[in-house]
Image (cartoon, rainbow, N blue to C red; front, side):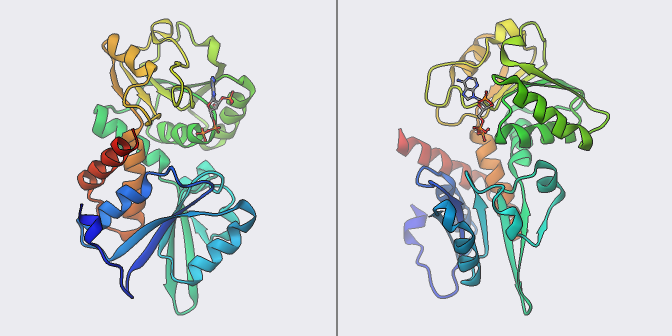
Length: 292
Ligand code: ATR
């Protein structure tokens, strides 16, 4: 494996992921593969940081020359007060998953963005050849992942967006939060058990159902999905939801693409050059296989 031959030196640029925990993350595997594929002298590590040490850890590593980083649970909102600037995407979503550290004579400027929505859209495009513009879309879930995906779908011109959640008030709160940014969009909140007969063209699962269990958040046949299903769960190649989608002849994709492409978009945000997608994809699949 090429990564084994890499030897850091005094000029190696450091990148990483802040989270708690981070030991299960696949990002180091595919970000380092991206660096190696392009011959970039950089290293990506996981930083497991106790929440009460977060600000001190970020400031310390930035002072030591950290070039850029990702954030995962529970730091995507915690990072906001430490940033000098955020992109419009991150502003709209209210959460940051990627930060670039730009150093000059005055100091270091931290700019945050959110690549989750972009990663999701790129996965729809590359894996499903699907354009959500003008489509009726049912999004299951109203957590952090749903927020990024809802913004992505609305900014891509989805014609109608239903957000269905087990806890219906959470879906209603997300719809309320989205409305000011998309005043003309058709957005509606529902309970998960109120989705029968909705006839969406695209269904997106952003709930954690199917992650470790053999359950499905809804029956696709009852919802009467017409064209495609995207499940953001990536731990198993085929969740029960995707199995049903395949049996119904619907186009479908799991969450590997979203995970990969949000990472590729982060790579591009840091380095201002195209990410080596196929090398990163291969490394991600190898890391997933090694875990099974
Ligand atoms: P994430 O940041 O990954 O979106 P989250 O914020 O914890 O994680 O959200 C998890 C989502 O999965 C929520 O929409 C949650 O529904 P509730 O808001 O009702 O908790 C949904 N979810 C988790 N377990 C579920 C289950 N067994 N059935 C249906 N929905 C479930």
